[in-house]
Amino acid sequence: MLIPRFAIAAALLSVGALVAGGCSKEPATVAAAIEIPEGEKDPAVWGKKYPRHYDSYLKNAEKTQKYSKYKSDNEDRISPWPFQVLLWDGMGFAMEYNEPQGHTESVRDQLLIHASRRAPGGVCLSCKSPYAPELKEKLGLDYFRKPYDEVHAQIPPSGRETGVMCLDCHDPKTHALRISRWTLKEGLKAIGKDESKLTRQELTTLVCAQCHVTYVIPKDAEGKSVYLKFPWANGRWGYIPIEGIIKQIKDENIREWKHKVTGLKLSHIRHPEFELFSAPGNIHFAAGVSCADCHMVYEVVGKTKITSHRWESPFKKNMKACMQCHTQSAEWLKEQVWIRQDRVNHMFTKAGYAVAEAALTIEQANATPGVDQALLDKAKGLYEEAYYRNTFIGAENSMGFHNPSEALRVLGDALGQAKETTMLAQEAILKAQGTPKHFDMATIDAIVKERYLTKDGKTQFRPNVARKAALLDPLQTAAAK
Ligand code: HEC
Ligand code: HEC
Ligand code: HEC
Ligand code: HEC
Image 1 (cartoon, helix red, strand yellow):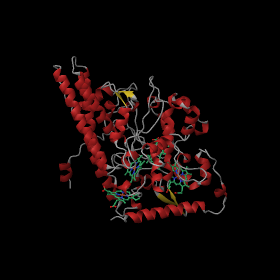
Image 2 (tube, helix red, strand yellow):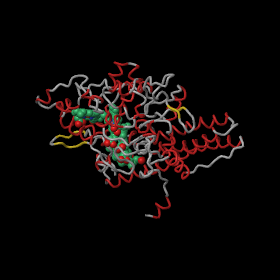
Image 3 (cartoon, rainbow, N blue to C red):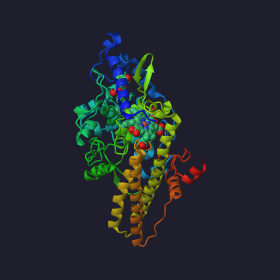
Image 4 (spheres, rainbow, N blue to C red):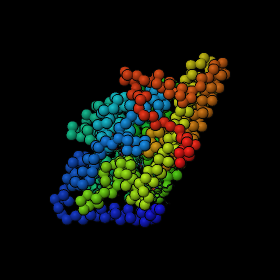
């Protein structure tokens, strides 16, 4: 049984109003008198005024392993789905790619990860450090194109290791929520959403959309980064479909790297939480639920109720976030998440291996003398479509929970396009008197092991990491009941 939707919204609003009111109406204590200067980044300074929020913010440094089925802080995210390393051969993601951890860690993690991931340059700081907007103003084009280390060194020493900070989401004077990134401001313009007319609930989701979105990095002729933007030109509020993102990548030719297996120049899709969450099919977005409702629970500290600033999976607090609105048990709620995630993972696995099969077949066609180029080009065009769709769901951080039906639709299309790519490439090989090879899941796993299992730092693919790529077996599930 659910508490009716409007009661939820009303209850949430009144709690929020209480909390906010409680802060602003506090008697003129020392804390209330503290003024946070405009541009202040140090969370410890903010913490003098908001000690409870600061305490909960510091907890973002905690690491929790295996708190849910598909998530574990900072764990290797390539090896559990081995096909991915083949799809990213030629790009930093194949070298090292990990599950996210807390907001305080974002810059530290960037400094620790394989150097190839920082290769795009200073631009990488954009969703990791609150210094990004002013560095962009100060350095102009150099902010994007100069090496990461050079731009990072421009941050004052005290701020070089702190990640997401209060200033990223709040106005220092009023502590109201505020959008601090040019990327989202421009993104909202692109979808025709007026930034000055956002509701509180919309803003509570949009502060997250400053970073939890996909982006593109246009390059100059030398391959140097020149900008960072959200490919939202073909979207609208409530639907920024992957089809529109792909169309913009193709229309504007924003290709960032060269895939070694197919020889194709490609773009990439990163963590599109906001895009998937806000697309049709997600009942929570439709009902006005915000990111913060599930990832920043209310908690009581002393006698005060605050919004927790430990951004985390709802599993880490045993589904307490969901139970703010739902009256069911934690067990039931967990099962609802897994049912959806298992099905999305099934299709992600199926589509992912199909895209890998397509890549290997194109590779064979490329090496076949006298191959029909027009046919092969058609196959390559479709490969790109399938690759972005599969990556859209794989890079999204909820394993489809944020919008299961849209996730399955996108993966279904990826699977179909990948199979068609393979057929076209096979036809090209046959027409040139070649014999197409077949690449099933086991063969692909074997190829990945053989090619990428190196100890010389070429990739961090490790076959012994627990596999998460899996196909559902409904007959077995039914028999187990
Ligand atoms: C990633 C964005 C983000 C960051 C970073 C952030 N906050 Fe918040 N903050 C929020 C959201 C979202 C709310 C809830 C607003 C609402 O309910 O409308 C909030 C609410 C608050 C409130 C209002 C009272 C409450 O509990 O709801 C205070 C005070 C606050 N934050 C202080 C801080 C401080 C201090 C920091 C840094 C240590 C910080 N915030 C960092 C997003 C952020
Ligand atoms: C300024 C950029 C930025 C903003 C704004 C932001 N995030 Fe994040 N978020 C990140 C980065 C970067 C990571 C990964 C950090 C890492 O792994 O080092 C992350 C990680 C997370 C995680 C995983 C934490 C864990 O311990 O596994 C959650 C959950 C999350 N963010 C939710 C939110 C929500 C909800 C909002 C809005 C209220 C938000 N984020 C706003 C950049 C941001
Ligand atoms: C109805 C609840 C709900 C809402 C609303 C929601 N999420 Fe989630 N989110 C989840 C669940 C459930 C997971 C999967 C967690 C797991 O498997 O441990 C998740 C996973 C994540 C993760 C990965 C967390 C981790 O531990 O690695 C991030 C980041 C994230 N969500 C960000 C967002 C953002 C940004 C929004 C808004 C655009 C949002 N979420 C809205 C429920 C929600
Ligand atoms: C802010 C309130 C709120 C929070 C928090 C919330 N939900 Fe919901 N949930 C709703 C509303 C509203 C609906 C739509 C129900 C309706 O109106 O019939 C819904 C619907 C659902 C449904 C049925 C959706 C479907 O697929 O058709 C599931 C399952 C669900 N929620 C699970 C969760 C889980 C798991 C969490 C925590 C990770 C969560 N919810 C957090 C308000 C919330």
